[in-house]
Amino acid sequence: MMKISDLLDLSKTVAAELFQGKEYPWEVLGDISDFILALGKKLPANEYEQVGEDVWIAKDAKIFTSAYIGGPCIIDHEAEVRHCAFIRGSAIVGKKAVVGNSTELKNVVLFDGVQVPHYNYVGDSILGYKSHMGAGSITSNVKSDKTLVVVKNGDEEIATGRKKFGAILGDNVEVGCNSVLNPGTVIGRGSSVYPTSSVRGVVPEGHIFKAQDNIIKRD
Image (cartoon, rainbow, N blue to C red):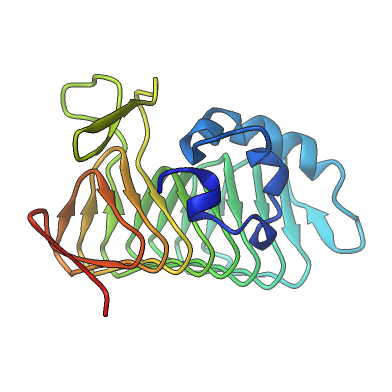
């Protein structure tokens, strides 16, 4: 339930090739920047405009003048980047995605239709098709002791080899307001997280996270 094929519909992102040859989604995190630089140069000029250094924005995207967009970055068709959004670079924003007011992105892939609309921090993370993070919810991407992140699923542990790794959200995941997704969190397709939760490890597909010891299957 942690593999790319279990979590993500690759037809719903301009970054599909980034995931080719990989087994787990976090394996792409170190390659996002170089991938954007390569892909950006191949984007059709009649659809995308290069704005500044290493930033490509679809001509039908809506970008508020107060937003900061650092490269490398690709913002796809009909995406919306709102007031005072802060895109620090190494970010792919999918078609019709929403990056909201005071939301910060760094080293991420947002699949098509993703919404991070209010005061979110998303770093070193992958958000699947139409996933949504409620107001104030964030990914925590570095452990307090600075050791390498391990993905834990019950008794199973997978070493990622990464010091910085936030969360993987499968397609159609809902994260409640003011929740924290701790380093190495993986949430399966169609699952939900209650507001003000602190999430660790793996939430299976089609489940509801109420508390760390109360994860129930959706009816």
